[in-house]
Length: 72
Image 1 (cartoon, rainbow, N blue to C red):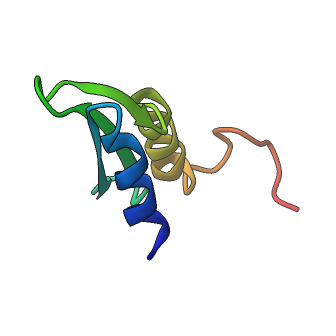
Image 2 (cartoon, rainbow, N blue to C red):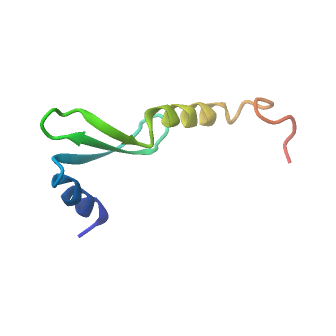
Protein backbone atom coordinates (compact mmCIF):
# COMPACT_ATOMS: atom_id res chain seq x y z
CA UNK A 1 0.00 0.00 0.00
CA UNK A 2 1.47 3.39 -0.96
CA UNK A 3 1.79 6.40 1.33
CA UNK A 4 -1.17 8.24 -0.24
CA UNK A 5 -3.49 5.28 0.41
CA UNK A 6 -2.26 4.94 4.00
CA UNK A 7 -2.84 8.65 4.56
CA UNK A 8 -6.37 8.39 3.13
CA UNK A 9 -7.23 5.52 5.50
CA UNK A 10 -5.79 7.37 8.51
CA UNK A 11 -7.82 10.55 7.99
CA UNK A 12 -11.08 8.74 7.16
CA UNK A 13 -11.39 7.81 10.83
CA UNK A 14 -11.82 11.54 11.54
CA UNK A 15 -14.40 12.16 8.80
CA UNK A 16 -11.83 13.67 6.44
CA UNK A 17 -10.31 12.85 3.09
CA UNK A 18 -7.17 13.90 1.29
CA UNK A 19 -6.83 15.25 -2.25
CA UNK A 20 -3.58 15.51 -4.16
CA UNK A 21 -3.12 17.96 -7.03
CA UNK A 22 -0.37 19.76 -8.91
CA UNK A 23 -0.54 23.55 -9.06
CA UNK A 24 -0.36 24.46 -12.77
CA UNK A 25 1.69 27.64 -12.22
CA UNK A 26 4.31 26.43 -9.74
CA UNK A 27 4.22 22.69 -10.54
CA UNK A 28 4.11 22.20 -6.75
CA UNK A 29 2.27 19.18 -5.33
CA UNK A 30 -0.65 20.38 -3.20
CA UNK A 31 -2.27 18.24 -0.50
CA UNK A 32 -5.74 19.27 0.64
CA UNK A 33 -7.40 17.80 3.71
CA UNK A 34 -11.14 18.31 3.56
CA UNK A 35 -14.25 17.49 5.58
CA UNK A 36 -16.24 14.72 3.88
CA UNK A 37 -19.62 16.09 4.98
CA UNK A 38 -19.19 19.78 4.16
CA UNK A 39 -16.53 19.43 1.43
CA UNK A 40 -14.73 22.31 3.18
CA UNK A 41 -10.94 22.41 2.86
CA UNK A 42 -9.58 22.18 6.39
CA UNK A 43 -5.88 22.40 5.55
CA UNK A 44 -3.77 22.87 2.45
CA UNK A 45 -0.12 21.84 2.39
CA UNK A 46 1.82 23.91 1.46
CA UNK A 47 -0.46 26.87 2.17
CA UNK A 48 -1.81 28.72 -0.89
CA UNK A 49 0.16 31.87 -0.01
CA UNK A 50 3.46 29.94 -0.11
CA UNK A 51 2.63 28.46 -3.51
CA UNK A 52 1.92 31.96 -4.86
CA UNK A 53 5.21 33.31 -3.51
CA UNK A 54 7.17 30.39 -5.00
CA UNK A 55 5.49 30.95 -8.35
CA UNK A 56 6.39 34.66 -8.32
CA UNK A 57 10.00 33.88 -7.40
CA UNK A 58 10.24 31.40 -10.28
CA UNK A 59 8.72 33.96 -12.67
CA UNK A 60 11.21 36.57 -11.54
CA UNK A 61 14.17 34.17 -11.64
CA UNK A 62 15.22 35.43 -15.08
CA UNK A 63 14.91 39.07 -14.09
CA UNK A 64 18.53 40.07 -13.43
CA UNK A 65 19.16 42.28 -10.45
CA UNK A 66 15.81 41.60 -8.83
CA UNK A 67 17.19 39.72 -5.83
CA UNK A 68 20.96 39.85 -6.37
CA UNK A 69 23.33 42.47 -7.73
CA UNK A 70 25.81 40.07 -9.26
CA UNK A 71 25.92 36.56 -10.69
CA UNK A 72 28.60 34.23 -9.30
